[in-house]
Structure formats: structure tokens, C-alpha cells
Length: 169
Image (cartoon, rainbow, N blue to C red):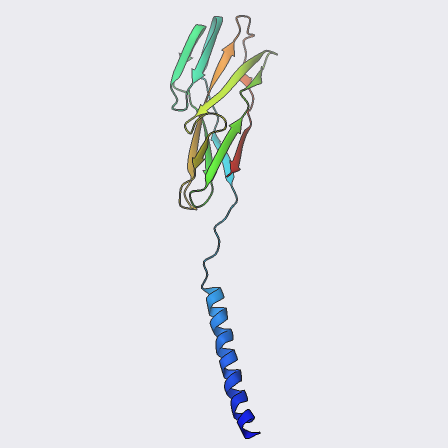
């Protein structure tokens, strides 16, 4: 009986040591990185001021360069900008971007024109790219577009929006 009494305290001590070792191992594990994706629009696409002498197009690429065709004449290129989105997703994960080919935008006087969306600086709709490796670093996405201007376009201020879908791969 004395032997059991001597083994029991040492067994308790060994179990306590193993328990503390287990807790230390759990606490020492790094936390998993955030898997949420955040995309914020920080700059709208702006085609500047232009007038229409006939049918044509005005395009702003993702670098902010402007190109006009047909009867479209650009008057103010100083305000021309691509759309910019800031994306936050940790640890170099793959992001897929999708968007509609085009959307219709409305004018202040009742007109409507087509906006062809893209391409982006990361590719066309369906393209995949990697986010930056740091959770605190923002991955910037620039988006261009082209307005299809019919000859009978009603003068006015045109505005609208286009959806972009970001998914984590």
C-alpha cells in the first residue's frame, strides 16, 4: 500500500506537467490569417468633357490614357481617370474578378449610352491574380472603359455604375 501512495503523487505531478505542456503548445500556435476579402472603390472612372459631332467612342484605359474615334471630340483630358479599387486579402491568395461586358448609363436629360467595362490592369473579366503577401498591404486594381456614343446622343451629364465581383480562389 505504501508503494501506491508514493506513485500517486508522482503520477499527478507528471499529468500536471503534460497538461501544462499541452496548453503551452496550443497557445504557441500562430493565429490563422483573415480570409475575408474587402474591395473598396476609391476613384470613379471619368471620361472628362467631350462633345459629339457624330457617332463614335471615347475610351479611358486602366492607365488613364484617352482615345476617341469617329465624331467624338475630347475637350478636357485633365480630369480623365480610370476607376480604382483597393482590395485587401491576406497572404498572397488568388482573386478572380468578373464583370458584365457592358452596362447602360443614364443622362441628366433622358439619354442613355453604353459603357463597355474593362479591361483592368489585372486582365479581362474572369482573370485571376494574387493579392499582396502582407495583410496590411492594399492591392490596387485599375479599371478602364469605353463609351459607345450614337450620333443622336442627347447632351447632358451621364452617370451610372458597373458591378465588379471579386471572389477568393
